[in-house]
Image (cartoon, rainbow, N blue to C red; front, side, top):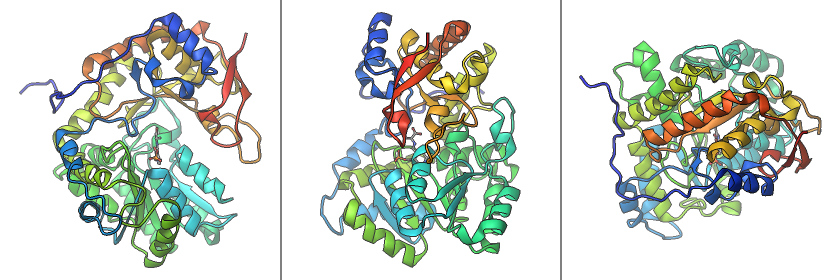
Length: 456
Ligand code: F0G
C-alpha cells in the first residue's frame, strides 16, 4: 500500500547534538593525533564510529532496569537472562560476560594452545587479537566474492567451504574449533546463508570439530536469510535465528550489538568440560557465573533487548535504513561494498583515493576528512587495523575501507541525509586528500591509540 518504511518507534527522550565549526574540528583532530578514536565524543556531530553499545534502549528496557536483582549469586535477573538466551540459542551453558571480547578471551584462553589455528570467515579485530594473544593463528577464509567490494552477491559473508576443508585436512590436528561470524563485520557486514552454516556443520561433523558462532549481529543475519533464501521467506526472524544457533555448538556474543543494550555479552557452550573451564576463568576475571561482570539490571536490559531485536518491524526498518544510505552514495558514484551491510556502509577508500597508497592509509585520510567537513565520525577498517603482523612487519590489508556504522534506533532519516551529503562532498574533493604516517603506536590493536602526521 504505502512505500515509506517509517521508524517503528516514536521518541520519548532526546539528547542534544553539539554543533562545531570546521575550524574547531581541525584543531580537535590535530590534538587527537589525527586518530578519531582519540577525539572527545562531544566534538563529534554524528557518531558512526560503531554500532556497538551506542543504541537507544526502549522504554520497556529502561523499565526492566528497575527490576534488576543485584544479588551476588543466584540473581533472579540471571535466570530471566538465561531463559531468554536458552530459548533463542538452545545452548546448555549460558555464561554472561561484560562484552563480546570477554567471551572471546575466556573461550580462547581456556581451549586454545600456541601454534593452533582458528578458521573463520573474517575475524573481527578483537577476535583476531585474542586468538593471536594465545600464540595461535587467526585464519580468514571468506569466499572470494567477499573480497571484491563492488561485486553484488547475496551472501558475501559465507566461508569458503573448500578452503575450510583444505585447512581441516592439512592442519586438522591444530584446529580446536571452527568459527563463523554473523554478519561478517570485517568483510562489510555481509550475511552468511543458512546453506553455508549447514555445510560448515557437516564439515565440523566430518572432522569432529566444535562449531562456534560469533553471533554479535545474528538478528540482522536472520533478516537477510529471510529476504534472500527462498526456503525461509515465510519464517519469522526469531525462528531463523533459532535454526542458525542450533547448527552450532556454542557462540560468543556481544549484546552491545543485537542485544540492543549498552553493555553486556555472553559465551554459550554445549560442552560440559569447556563450560567448566570457562566458568573457572570467568570467576577469576569477570565475576561469579550468575552475573559475569554485569549488574543485575544489565542482564534485564539484554534479556528484553534480545526479544525486541527479532521483531519484524524493527528488522525491516533497520536493514532498510542502512540500504537507504547505500543507495544515495551509489547514485553519486561513491564506491562502497555492495550490497549494503546490515549495520553499516563500507566506503572503498582504496578505490576512492587511488593516489594514496595503502601504506599511507587511505582509510584514515578519508575518515578524517569526513570528520573535518561535517563532524561525522567513521572508522577505518583497513591497513591500520589489520596491516601489522604479530612479527612486527607491515603490509596492506585485503581492503582499505571506511565504515559508517549506524547505531540502532538513534538517528533519523534526516541525520542520514546529512551524512550522505557530507560523504558526497568529500568524495567530490578527493584529489586534495593526503595520506598519513604513524608517529607513535602500540604493538597490538594499534588503531585505537596510534598517532599520525599528515604527509606533505
Ligand atoms: N565480534 C564482532 C564481529 C564484533 O564486531 C565485535 C565488536 C566483537 C566481536 C567484540 O565485541 O566490542 O562487545 O567486545 N565490534 C565493535 C565494532 C567494537 O565497532 O564493530 P565487544
